[in-house]
Image 1 (spheres, rainbow, N blue to C red):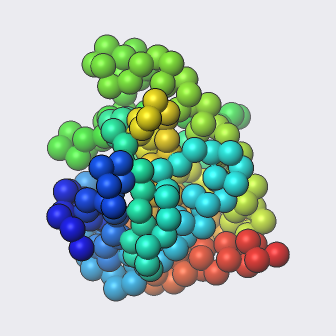
Image 2 (spheres, rainbow, N blue to C red):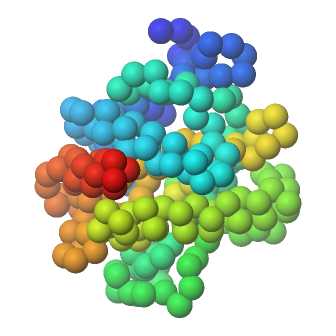
Length: 236
């Protein structure tokens, strides 16, 4: 393994095969509330890696440009090196989590339209919400880049909502990160139960990181169920 370039809450980033690639290794660490709650869950990294790889490959088949080059092993992927845009894109299909708390809307409430919102990618500041004019004023992204990220977010939402529905899972909300590489905007990071809210369509059972956040127990069982269902759908 090469030099560690960066260690995040859930991943390690290493030098890649050349100057245009990096290697990402998933960790077993689970965190919540900006790192205030932390625990090692053995096998979590492998589950997130496999789930995210399935999703990224599926999105690529549907025409979404991503940073994924190849899967290296159970917890490692080689990806295109990209300049990460320091703006997280959050897509909401149902009211849940911070949205419900902030606006006093019961979790699970149907929204009249899908919401796309932005937050500043900053652990130190608690990832505060940020609007388009603030983003452009701070030089975090150009107006045209935000428009493309928003368009991609809606497109990804449609693709993944249909995929998860086939697996009898409701895609409640999720977070996306994008980066710049070779003059393109690429989908980066991961899409997994760490970054999505995923509820069983029939029972409403949570299969995502809320099991960890809210001490619901059997955290990895939820992740395993997501993986099992996605594999079944993709093997049809």
